[in-house]
Length: 524
Image (cartoon, rainbow, N blue to C red; front, top):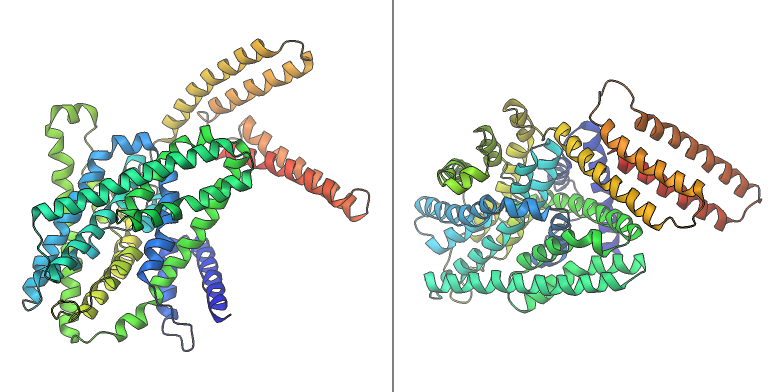
């Protein structure tokens, strides 16, 4: 009973914190992190120990899965080179540079332990990258790169942590052993993710009940991650591959009702998990600080050195990775040369999250199983401090930096022009289908459908017009919502007076809700 109460309290606080963040115009992860930090020292507030298994198997998979579902596969493919440079190359470089820096500060600590710390803090977080990048309003390609990096870099980092921990325990580690480990983890995860994605797609095509489709979708990331973990492959890669595959095919797998319902379900799951996870990170402060045995001067010195190294290495990597690649004619002709402001914003968007803390908790205990003595509690604190510093320093200042450097969202007029052109083609195809299949349908029905198609095509072109006055489609939406409101009121009064049963009200409400949802989607 106590565990249930604690869970309800955490969820309630995360909801209130998210609501407060939206009202104040802040990013919710930052507000919830600060709330967790403060609550960790409130007397009598429940302690929340974040188990690594809970994060890596219970929390991370659905968050990665829903992020992958929402990622454009064509955009991901076009940005694959910078994504892999960040998710693999930068993570490996960061791990070794931080390892050598910490080893210089703590020469008595084995280099393998220092590299393990570097791998732990190297990967930016998927949740914070997605939440903050979209909130800031960055260009679409920048968001794709940041999301793609955060989807894949955990796999690289966790493999390096495992390899470094094995070296710390005395296992022989060389280039061949590392290559084998990477091939086994990443390759196995890719195969498992693809196989289960195909199986899930097969189920979705044959299930007609939207509730069952939601259940299959919710179970998919957990089944994938459990099988991947049992087979000792990368569960992160497996979940991401499954999400990308299914997200790309959802328009052809699900019915319209199922898509609307599944979208709402995953939005709720994502909202609750994001809130709880950052609140839990903040609540670790009391426990992490209480476990430190290293003196304060050394703790501050190592933490500052790791944070500075993280920032500098990411900046030092970004500019050559961005511009040297464009010396290759094929890349130069295919990709536009970005302004220096773009790699600067990407370099500053290096917020760490819950995976860093969970990975730190997996560090082996010193003196057990041949592991030499090293300051494990210091490394766990440094990992926690890096999360807090990157979120509060980089996450909080990223919007201002993007504004100062004028790195903005893509031109909405270009999107509207592309939409209008495609909508014109789609409308023409719809009218051809109407003429081909009209047959003996009543002329009034055919005329109504033709008017609907023409109205939708006109709405797309209206978005290119002036934003200073209300367009016909905007007026239609505003007035139709008022009409729907009046209809709802009439049905509600009739139900209250006993003139219609509850079932009639529910059916009418559903039809009106679907129409209003369609209005909102057409305006967004």
